[in-house]
Image 1 (cartoon, rainbow over the protein chains, first blue to last red):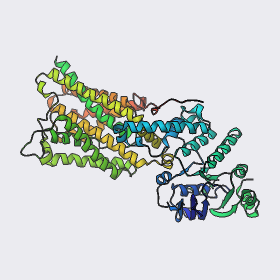
Image 2: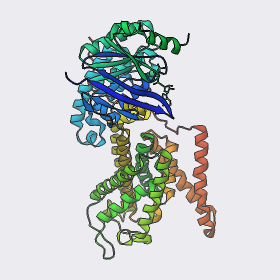
Image 3: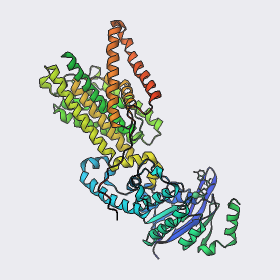
Image 4: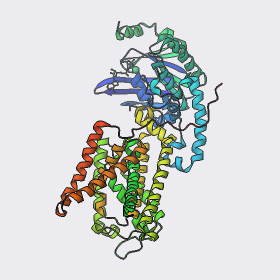
Length: 256
Length: 318
Ligand SMILES: Nc1ncnc2c1ncn2[C@@H]1O[C@H](COP(=O)(O)OP(=O)(O)OP(=O)(O)O)[C@@H](O)[C@H]1O
Ligand SMILES: [Mg+2]
């Protein structure tokens, strides 16, 4: 069998003596869409921070397509095809929607000040290609009508969509989506679900954190359940969510 | 007639301050780098150009007698390299440490100008620096206006280049880093490398300004590059509006005008033996003006505008 697109082996992380992720392992196969679920505070977002390189694990190994990237910087991992969205979206608020998406293109010649001055032709050619791609992605997430507006005017759901377009602009092989449907109004929810399925059908592997079980059931073939930083269960969504230990942590963890 | 010549002299110097101010705007206004060693980078440029362009002198190394244009380019280049090295060492530090380090480096470099006599002429400085349009020097009016035209042209070119950069992918990613560094990093951007580029570019511009000033005045010495210069340039940028290239130019002209006016006023009002002490009133005037302005218009006279990167090609809606 070929290497999984993304794998984590024995990851641990603690904040001030508080163990938030403990000996966590998971795999995302190439082209797979895996759900990462668990009650609030289970350590899911921290897991994303470790996978994306925002945080360094205390122990464990992270592999991208079989290659050990544990010591690679966040930027390096993005360059190798791993992109993530944030639970609380981080748009570049005073930049336009188009600029937000343009910024995330990788390998831009024009990001070097000397190239801008010395190789204007190469910079312009790349910009033209990137603008076309950025606009296609903005269409894809249905934000075309807001293309030239600053990102600060977007609603919560639109910000999630913008993050999706920004992530796709990096031409990723694996994407980590942190609650892409949280706080999204029902009208946008179907659009977001549809777009995630579409992205996955193009062969991009996805790890998806989500509290919306309906969405998980519709999108994922497999889910990984985390509780108190540990791996609790793994399997098909319908089956796993019926297991007593999983039901228990949700009942304990959720405000009733 | 004399008045007209003085106006050109004054404006030419204001243009050289505008250039320094544009350099600081790249570092602070666009990137948020707190450089408190501006004077040193100006000085490095000035001494570099002087070294390259003055005729050979027995008691000084250098004196290559090269054309002034080569001096300008060399000044920008050497200042860029020095800023790059300083930046590589210090930009990882927290911003308050960057301020302290640049201040320290500026003091150290100023002491170098003063003490490495074989290179810099020591405390006596260097005179007889070749001047642009030196052949018409006898005609003060013509000479000053020719230099003003040259300096103003340089400011215009620099302004256009910097505006172009602000609208380029480089300006865009710099703004992204300023808006949300964590998000930029997650999208594969390297904030440290981008800051370093901005710091080196700003330093290059300051060095160029030092060279232009040296070739206009015709004489440089270490006291030109004391922290007072840094203070003046910061005052100019804050008054004009940091983050706005036009503001940087306006602030430079205005603050330089107030500086020069208060200077001549002091020399009128105070007797000769009091003037050295009275000169510190100039600093008070600028300081008070800064305080008032910051109360009235904290973003400066021309506040930062929203920059939008250039769009290439039009959208074909289907
Ligand atoms: N930077 C940090 N410093 C200290 N504690 C942290 C930090 N980040 C997360 N934590 C703690 O780690 C635990 C796990 O947080 P995390 O955000 O990973 O949970 P989560 O599973 O994503 O929860 P949610 O579903 O609410 O988003 C929480 O108790 C949180 O308070
Ligand atoms: Mg979370």
